[in-house]
Length: 352
Image 1 (cartoon, rainbow, N blue to C red):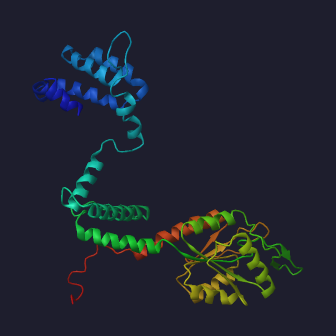
Image 2 (cartoon, rainbow, N blue to C red):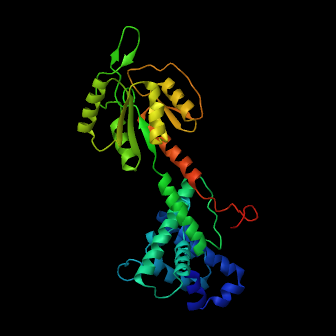
């Protein structure tokens, strides 16, 4: 905009196009935008003193409009203060410096609407489709996929496929998570003479457990308590949970034997099981080989002395670790459910 003003309105068009030295001096003026704001005033004075006299009227105008304001008994504020047009911070932070992307978005939206004065309903539907499309692109980027920009980006057919992908992603965004109680939510506080462990308390007192449950629930995940204990313990734990957090769990399942946890996970279709007993997780893995399993080692009263490596069984020592793992599993599920729009099926299937 400034260079257009220089060439056309101030009569420098011929000089700008034919004199390379003068053109270089013009570029120095625009380069002021990339200096630190605190240095611009002094650097402008240095530029003014080193510039040929033919540029002084232009620099006077630039000073009045962009740096110090019009000269009078006291300087007024410039029409466009330095903070408005300075690009130093945006450049160092790798942010956009132009509004080209906004103009491109407006052009794309116009190509989708395909008329000058759409009805309110058509306009609203176009905005909804645009929101679906942008959300889909963001999910792709966040999941590590490369988003290709092409001339067909705004074609209706691509939008239709992207919208389908969006709904698939929304469906795949939430997980069904099975969670043990003792050693995962409640600290093991009962030890016998043979080195066994258990719990008497029905409190959720593992560090960060309660706030993590609320976080998972707020993100739409389905949470199921899957715990092994006797009937009396099951009744006490149920009453405690319903009194403390009645809106967290989608279901409470207390099994009569630890090996039955695998059957509950299979019945519910769980995507993830969190348990502090490795043997239980191994049993679940034999029953459901593709299920994600978390070996929780965050009970401060228990020493974990086993080491086990398996692609489907990962270790988490704290509940924040669990939350990070859930996000990774979400990403895997998104990738698994996405329709790959880059894969062509031409000449590979029968068209019926």
